[in-house]
Length: 228
Image 1: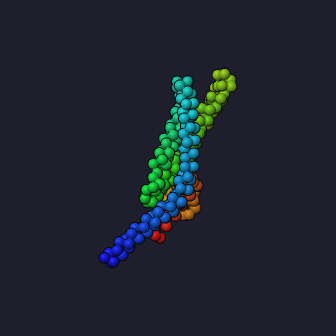
Image 2: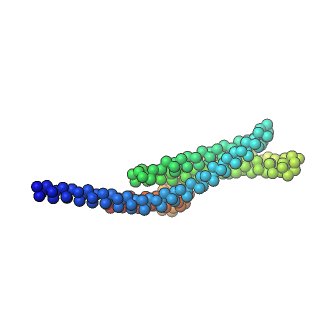
Image 3: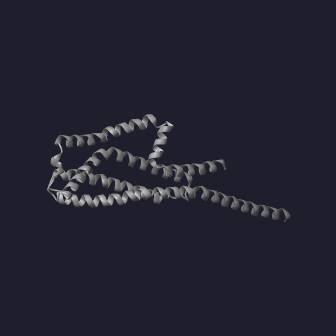
């Protein structure tokens, strides 16, 4: 009977110890994960700004296109700007959705996988913004200048008549060719430089310092788990 009582007391002590260790582990987890969560929340500011910007641009371009759909010289750049804005809008929605779906209470491996997916999404978004910026930017310039001079002159001045057609076509050609050539160059750099620290630093800078800090916090927690 004395031995049985000792065994029961020992089991109770083991249960209390397991409970204390689990509680301590959860407290450490919360202390590490909460700053990472806050950093990622700050990262949602930019996709939200992009959302508002895209909605405003789409409204403006829609109005412009409805007034100039019959003139392909103006309708074509307006459609290009609208398509680029729609792409940015969709990618921003995807970013916000993945940030909202990230489960900070789940396993560390899943959190790390979600952060890597989020990082890849932001890098991919930045890459396409750079690749499309010459074409979409020039089309936005044409649309903006036409709207501005039409408004200032009350419709008496057509800005396209002031530009050399060959200069306009050259800018369109450069913007179109920049997409495949830039894509190939980015692929070559990714294959040749993916092991270099400076390349990883560039990618971390593109994906955002808040996301990089959140990844480091999760890696810190993962290392503590391995040590335990």
